[in-house]
Image (cartoon, rainbow, N blue to C red; front, side):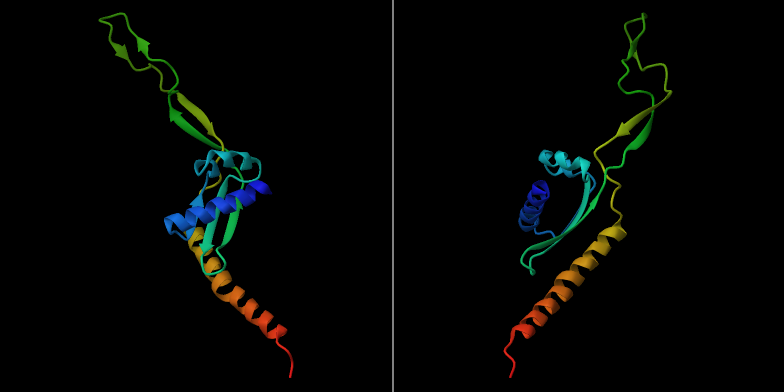
Length: 143
C-alpha cells in the first residue's frame, strides 16, 4: 500500500513538472527502479491527472505478462575464430533462440489511452463537481 501511495506521489510530481495529463507505461521500474518492488502486484499503469480536482489521479494497473521473443541465433554465443588469416566469422548457426522477457505488462493500446482520457474527463469534470454541488445543497439550512 505504501508503494502505491509513493507511486501516486511520484506521478503527481511528474505530471506537474512535465505538464502532461496522461501516462501509459508497461514497465513501472522504467520510471524509477524502486517500483520494481511492485512487480508482484503490477507491472503496468495507465494514469491520468486532473489539476482541477485537487490534483487527483486515476490509475489503472496491469499485471506482469511473460513474453517469449524468438531470435535468429543466440546473441550470447561467442564468435567463431577460424584458423586461416585470423579472420573472425559470425557464429555458424542461426538456429532459433528464445528469450523470456519479464517485468512488463501487456502494452496499452491507443484506444485504452483515449478511454482513460474520457474517464478522467467524466470523473473529474462531471461526477466530482456534481457530487460537491449535491453535498453543498444537502448542507444548506432549510427554510
